[in-house]
Amino acid sequence: MTSLADLPIRDDLRGQTPYGAPQKPVRIALNVNENTHPVPAEVIAHVTQAVERELRSINRYPDREFTALRKHLADYLGGGVTPAQVWAANGSNEVIQHILQAFGGPGRSVLGFPPTYSMHSIIASGTGTRWIAADRDDGYRITEATAVAAIDRHDPDLVFLCAPNNPTGTPLGLDVIEAVHDASRGIVMVDEAYAEFMPEGEPSALSLLEGRPRLVVSRTMSKAFAFAGGRLGYLAADPAVIDALRLVRLPYHLSALTQAAAVAALQHAPAMLATVGAIREQRDRLVVELARLGYDPHESWANFVLFGGVADPRGVFEYLLAHDILIRDLSIPNHLRVTAGTEAETTEFLEVLGRMGR
Ligand code: PMP
Image (cartoon, helix red, strand yellow):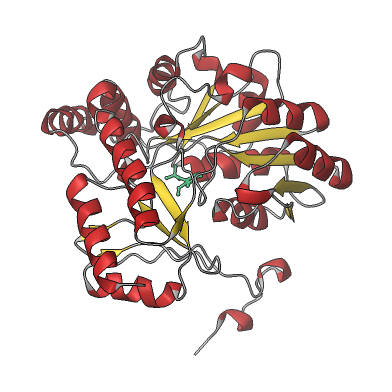
């Protein structure tokens, strides 16, 4: 049998492991930070209609510039963001890949702050961009001084920030983002996949875009927006950045069905986001209840909680799995991460964990 090592694969990919969040058929999946609430029936009906209409011209290539979708995304973001500032792709993973294809690549580097979203370094590797891991401060925070010192030391071509950070949930102040931008010479990308879960009224890095053409803010419809299966991620940046991304995207990368489904879903933004408040409540409940059970949950502004004090993460993971509950073991010593689900899912997770004892 042929193994990977027998193939003439790129040397820099030898020995690498692919992204591998387990996909298992369980009753309660709290492992990849989806919105676990059912999609409203009226949205399903409208998306179905929109997709059906699109099928009449499915013999033709789709709008390469996804014009209608860019307009709806700009409207959704608000704050004066224009369609010319918006880019989209099949999930924000592909958006991030476009950024690295255009601004990274062989001979270039991207600096990030682990523990952070694992795909940042995996996409760096796939595009031949050198990944530089910088340290965080206590409690997974990043202070201005720490961030600026890492940039001064490594002089990266890009800096990736994640706000709130996955897998820790840690918030990141706009002052730190500004300082990172001012200290660096390259593209600064703020991954705001979980922005909608931040406390009401907290500003997004979108408010920093004006006058900062090297700043990029990425978002996704996969989390709060309850559209992970639709595969739609996007970003906002200076129109010149969007021109750079046109150089690396494949023509017609967003299918006509994806565009139609996403536009229809965006027209129901309030309904799709109606569960965000309830999810925030379950997240805050998880922090309180996990502490009551004797664990060390970290502050989270996202829809998940990372908790420490787990003597045997693998054992707890397997115990929950045996009870049809899937959470995430990210190989951070003594830690596990759980997504805030519906009230019933959260209750069952806490009850099973409580029954296990520590
Ligand atoms: N960024 C962060 C921080 C994430 O956690 C995720 C999904 N886990 C993504 C980006 C990618 O999401 P998608 O490709 O579904 O938009």
